[in-house]
Image (cartoon, rainbow, N blue to C red; front, top):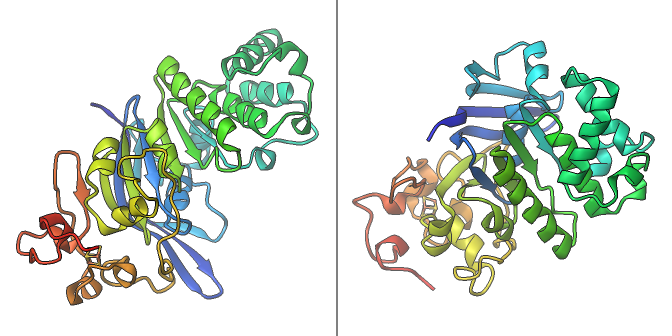
Length: 337
Ligand code: SF4
C-alpha cells in the first residue's frame, strides 16, 4: 500500500510562562492511500498538536523542533509558506470540532464554500455555484438551493458540521484531517455524520486522519489506530485487534473503563484514575508509569522501545520484552484484576 503521508520523529513544543511544553515528543506514523487512521488519546495526549503540526497550524508559541512530514514528495515542515498554502485546504483539508469558530457568522454558507473554490480553482461564478450545490447535496443538506443564502446560525449543529465537511471537500482533497468533528453533537447526529464521512470516503477514495478521545468513533470509521499519551504513540494496531487484544496497559485501561468494552465497539472512553504528566517536565521513562498498575522500577527510569507483538502492531511497554517476568504480566498470561 502506498503511503500518502508519512510523519517521522515529529517533536513539537510550546513556549509558555511555566516553561517549554513538550506536547509531541517524537512520533512516527504513516497514512495509506484511501485508509482511515484513528489517533486516540485523552485530552493533553498530544493528538491535536500532532495533527496541527502536519499543516503547521500551530499557535504563535508553537514550534516544530524536529522531524519531518512527507507529503507529495515534500517535507511540509520545511516548505515555504506559499507552497504550504497551496496544499492547505486544497490537497489536505481539516474539519474541527466547532464549526462556528471556522465559519464566518456574517457570510451566507453558499458564499463561504464558493470562496474556497474561488481561492483554489479556476472555476467561473456559474460553475462555482453549480459545484457549491453539488457539494451541499453530497453532504446531504436538504433543499440546497434554498440554503445557499442562509447564515451559519440558521443551521442546526449537525447541519453546520455538514457545511464544514462540504467546505473541506470543496477542492477534492487527498487527505482529510478531522479533529473531534462529532464531539459537540448528540449521539444520533454524531452517528449520521460518521456514516456520511464513511460513505464520502468510499465515494472519493480520500484518506482520513480521525482524531478523537472516543474509541466508539474510531471503531465506526477507522481501520487502524494509534494510541497517544504523554506526547508519544504508545500503541498502534488494526482496529479489530486493538479491541480484541490490546497490547499496552494504557489501551487496556481505556477499554476497561467501560464494562464489556472489549466486546462492545460502541464503548466510550472515560478517564483512567490519575492525571496525565506535566509536559513541561515529561517523565524520562514510560509516561504512563505513575498510573500503571503493572509499573516496575525500570519503567520510570527508562523509556521502553517499541516491541512488535504482531503484524502492523507496535507497543511501547517493557512487559513485552522477551525477558520480562511472566508473573503478573498481562501479556504473558498473568493479567491482574
Ligand atoms: Fe506500565 Fe511499565 Fe508498560 Fe509503562 S512500560 S505501560 S509503566 S508496564
